[in-house]
Length: 270
Length: 317
Image: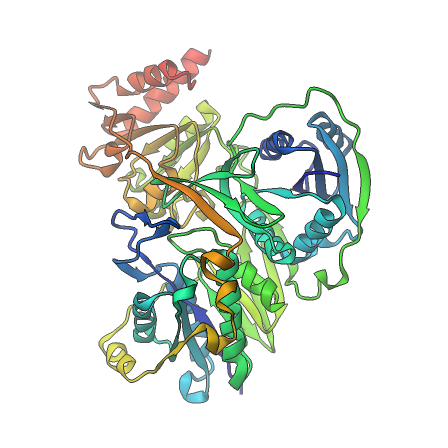
């Protein structure tokens, strides 16, 4: 009998990268009107589901909690996660969180993770390799530092056994095998698995799953520690770049390779 | 007291260009010290002096490479305390960013990633949302941490050669306790080409290569360029995943990006549209890549690329 697992997967609702994305307001924050579950978070969710399915799934007492922090719209990322297979959803939401940078975000999430550990220890916090909007990749490492946990980031494979997590990481010049004791914060790459789509059964089942809403007070965070006030960085200006415009387009008439080199020479790029 | 601390991880025999860039930016901000993990060879040490480093901080432990990120972050945090630095510069690699991340929490310092320039007042400049916005950001804390993208400045040695003093920094005992341990490491075969994220020129191929990267590799070698690829090409297994340029791969800003057989959908564009000059070759005139190309060729890449390669070799003699 394998041990049961309690896994928190961090999910984020982000603007759809297929469309134009904008920054607005005094704090130059991202517009989230047309938001979706961050594609990279689906890999973390899939990894979590595979881990619990190997242990008898939710029936055997395993849990995959989809945790999202953000305004009302963030609940859509949680709902999608429940349809895909997460066992429960938690929405950390509070007016005061608006404009939180990575440091403030990790503070609030760390408090939520501790809160969720109240009814039984959390074994793993799983995340994607980056959000597809901010793309700083800071939050998983900062969360690990705040929780005093090992981080296993950019995992391209993942095994959990005997209270330990083993992962493979691929860098440009080398690959490495990494080991840590549980609990740990693990971020996974888009190479780790092929995320499933929600099926009809999953969509129906999701309607019966609960989504808990938590405020900052619920997780014991003072509003002054988060949002613009609690952030350690501030965006002082944001300027939309003029879109790149097309230059010269030619059709090959047998000498386009030569013309390409002429162009490079003219640009002093040879 | 140093104002700026630059972290260089395992400098090797010769400092990388990206390290020289960090040292150049650091000098523009104030007196520079360097925290070095790993072996420091004489040549690399001399270069640190030539770039104006007043002090070199070394960890008391020699096993930081055995742990993932946390131990190095603890060392850099201790070096910041000891040096009194108010700005910390690191490279923008995934590991550099994660060290920056943990350092930020340890020092209660604001972290700004993907930086391309830092003003004297600590304002950092970067691009966000796949290059569609240019933003300026500042840390509001006593210490600022910046991870700086490669190819942001031209490296320039200091006017006068410095002889840095070496200072040993005690790595806190808790550094390894909460760190994941690296239990095995396999070196990959070196390609001999420049590093994709640092390269001045990138030649990238996509679906149009149909499994054969030879024309892209030959053009890259003629230009001394790195080889990149679209997600379609890496997913198909035609080339290693390391070569992927795009939202889920590497974001590159070279002087020249040559895109061959890549349609240029948003996922790819996110990784390359801040390149100075973009050249595209695609047989489909409707490919979105032509909307952002400075020079586009509608044609067969298997004819155009080899012709260009031969012409470059001819001109370079």
